[in-house]
Image 1: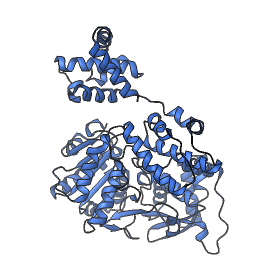
Image 2: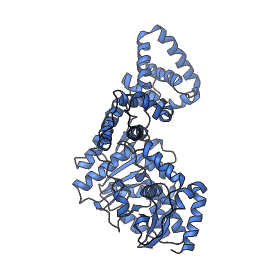
Image 3: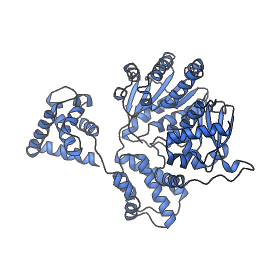
Image 4: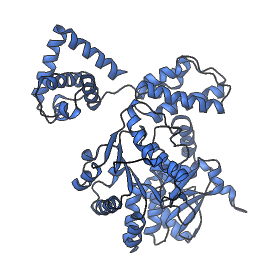
Length: 497
C-alpha cells in the first residue's frame, strides 16, 4: 500500500469516526506493510492496539477494501518492535485518559461480554510481542489455535472466560447447565441453544467457555465462534469477491457454530437470508448451534419470522438480572484475584456487601468499581473502608441507583404467586391471575416512571383505564387485606434490593 492510498484511507476514517476520535486513535497509527492479505500497523502502546482493534478495526478494514486493497484482517505491532524505526508518536491525551479510565473503571467481568469479542470483527490480531502483555486471545477455527491462515475466520476468545471463572447463581444456573452440557459432550436434546439477556449477565462468557472447553477436550471438532456483525461482513466480502461458494463451504462444514449478538442482523435482508440457509443446513446435519442476543427471538424487531421461529425450536434461556447473592459471589471471586496483585491492600468488613447491594444493574461496573478501589488503595496506602468507598466511587454509585423495570416486576410477581409469566400478561381473567396482574400493575405505577398507557402495553396491550382500575383496587385492598399488604411490602423490598 502506498502512502497516497493510506492517506485516502485516513481521510475516509476521519470522516467516519470524527475529528476527535481520529486524532486520538487513528492518527498515531503507522502503516507497516500489506502481506498475505494482512495489513499491519505500528502502534505506540499495547493498550492503543487493543483499543483500536476493539473499536475501529471494522472501519479500517472496510476502508482498506473500498480503496482497492485485498485485506482479510488487520494486525497491530508495537512500534518498539520496529528495528531502526523512528520514535513513534506518543499517545494523545485522549488515549491516555481513556487508558486510565478503562484500567480503573471498566475491568472485564465474570459475567460480561469482553469488548475484544464484540469488536475486532474483521479478525484483528496483535503481534506476538503485543500479546505478551494482553490477555491471551485466539481465533478458534478447525478445533485448534488459529494460525496465520485461519486468523480472522472466527472471533477472538478471551482466556479468562472459562467455566471455572463463571460464578453460578440462581439467575444463570439453567444457562450454565445447558452450556456445560454442550461443551462436555453430554446428551443434548435441544438445538439450538439460545441465550439472551441484558448487558453484563454472562452470555458471551458462557459462549467463550463452551469454545475453550471444546478446544481442550474435543480438538477433533471444528468450532467457529463469531459475532453476527462479523458474519455479515464476511458475507458481504464474499459477495464482492465472488467467493460465496467458499463462504458457504466454511460455515456449513463446522461441527459447532456460535453466533453472538444475533440481533445485529435484524433488518439486513440478504444477511438474514444466508443465515437462515446456514442455520437449516447445520441443523439438518445434526450440528450444534449456540446463539446469543439481548432479547428473546420473538422480541427482536425486524428479525424475519422464519428465523425467529427456528431460533425458538431449541432451548431458549433468559439470563435474569443478578441477585444480591450472585453479585457478592462475583465480588468475592474478584477479590481473591486482586489480592494476588495487591497483597498489602486491606478491605474493611462490609465493603463487598455494600457494593453488591448498591451496584445492581451491570456486573462490568461492579467489578470495575472493585478494580478502582484496589488501584486507589495501593497508591495512597489506605485501607478500603466504607467512607473511602463512597468517596472513591461517588460517580459510579450516583449512576447506579436502582432502576426497576416493568419486566422485572412481572417476573417477580409471577414467581411470588407461582403463575406463568405468559398468563400474567395474557388474556386470562381468572382470579388466580387477575389479582397478581393488578399487583404487578400497581407496583409498575409505584416503582417505574412509565405512564399508564405504557404500563398497559406491557401487559398484553391493555388500555390505560384497566391500569387505573388495578391501581385503585390495590390501593383499596392494601388497607383492608393484610395478606395483600404483606405481599406488596415483600415484593417491593425484593425489587428495590
